[in-house]
Image (cartoon, rainbow, N blue to C red; front, top):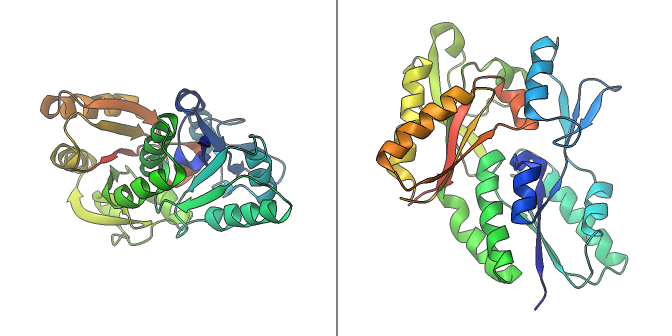
Length: 283
C-alpha cells in the first residue's frame, strides 16, 4: 500500500511545529511589503511580526499564493512511490487550487510516476486546518487517498468557522469583505458575526459591541461542536481573549480538546489585530 503524504498551503495557518507533529507538508505563500520586502509565510515571517509591521505600514501588504515551481519542487521532494494529496484553500478566493492542478499535470507529463490528487477544500485558515489535520491522521493510520477524499467530501460542509473582528477596516481595504452587509460597522460599533462556509465569508448576525459578538461566537461553538472534539480557538494578537473563550467553552464542553493558535500572517492582513474565532467539526 502506498503511503499518502498530505500537503496544504500556509494559509491553513497550521504552525510549522504542529505540521511537523502531524506529518503535514506546508507550501508557503508570499507576503510583500513592496517589491523589495517579501517574506515566505511562516518561514521568514510569523504572525506576531506581521501584526507589528502592520501597525507601522502606510498601506496593506500584498500576498501571492505558491507558484507552479513551488508546487512542483514540494511534490518532487517525496519518493515517487508515495501518493500526494494536496488539500488547497478555497478556489473561490484564490488561484492556489488551479495552480496546484497545473503543477500536478506538468509533473505527470514529465514522467512523474506517483499519484497526485489536488482537492478543493472550500475552506481557509483554521477551517482548512480542521480538514487537513483529519486527513493527516487518517494517512498516518494507513488510509488510502480515496478513503481520505471520501472523508473530506463528507466533512467539508460540516466545518464550523465562526469569528468576529474588532474592526473591518483591513477587510475593506483588502477587498475581502465579501457578503458582509454592514458598511458603517466601525462607526456605529456594530459587529457582524462571521462564518466561513461554501468557500466564502458571510455574516450571520449583527449585534452592538465586540463583547456581545464574541459571546455569540462562543454560543455557536458550544451549541454545534462535537462534545469532546477538537476545537481551534484562533486570535489575531489577542491571547487573553482566546483564553477567555477557552474557559467559557470548557464550562459547557469540559472534554473538548482545545488548541489556541494565532491567525496567520496572510489572513491576518485582512482581519487586522483583534480577530477572535473558533473552528471545529459540527455535530
